Amino acid sequence: MEPKRIKRIGVLTSGGDSPGMNAAIRAIARSASAYSIECLGIRRGYNGLINGDVISLDARSVDGIITRGGTMLYTARCEEFKTEEGINKAVNTCQYLGMDSLITIGGDGTFRGAKDLSDKGIHTIGIPGTIDNDIVCTEYTIGFDTACNTALDAVDKLRDTMHSHERCSVVEVMGRHAGYLAMYVGLSAGATAILTPESPVDFEEDIFEKIRHARISGRSHHIIIVAEGYGKADEIAERIHQETGIEARVTILGHVQRGGSPTARDRVAATMMGSYAVELLKSGSTNRVVCMKDGKICDFDITEALQMSKELDPAMQKVQKLVSI
Ligand code: ADP
Image (cartoon, rainbow, N blue to C red; front, side, top):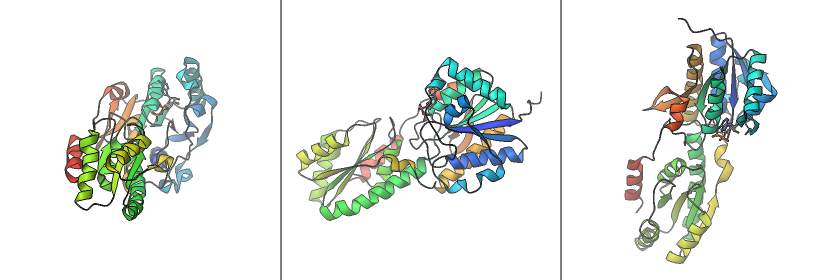
């Protein structure tokens, strides 16, 4: 049987923002327009769905946004949406607007909300958008590459001053409960050690002894990358100072990592995932998450996707220890 023709789709961004969300919105609006499907932008995450805060998105209204970080639809967290009453209000808005399908761009929480809506008969598709790359069903999330490069740029600058003063720099990067951002930034910055929630670190062997040894062999500065989910950067710096005698300075990069014009990788991933989501809706799919597996775009059932697991690449961890001498 031919899938029911969809007439009007909505798109929203929810949870933390990430560079490339705009590129995904653009791809959704343009792909919908190419298929003569109307597209609505829901503002401020699920709040906009509850309150009917909606704008029309035609092909021209997304001109120029591919270069911009953040999200033109704004993003928010919405506690009301986690209640039965909130979900029912959102469903009423969808029915009132004649919006049979919804694409949600965000993280795990956003997808849980999408599942609740699909249980109520709204066709939903999730797109992974977060700088943390912590969504278990997908190798890649929109915004990760830009955040890595933003953090790397900052660490490279810190390296100059650490070198001049012969200090150790302890840099905390974001990542929520995951160490992907820390691992990529640390490996690309040539860090002495990378502290992630996923991998245990022997402070004596992996940090203090390495610093002592590197100093004897002529290295003047050291960089330690700490994932925000690992622990307190201040305490780590204090321990390094006490154990090695080297002055250790802490830098917490914070929200700067969430901003900036998306890299080519993020623009391409967002464009391909956004367009793929429209194709899924067109073919009658619902309750799916768009993912990347072995470098290819695919999709999984939301419930199954949320139960998958993902680990830090053991090869990256091994190589990091080998090259950080
Ligand atoms: P992220 O999507 O980045 O993981 P959050 O966990 O903050 O961010 O979730 C974003 C929003 O998704 C929440 O503010 C809420 O509106 C909605 N949400 C989160 N968890 C649920 C849930 N279990 N059921 C329904 N909606 C949820």
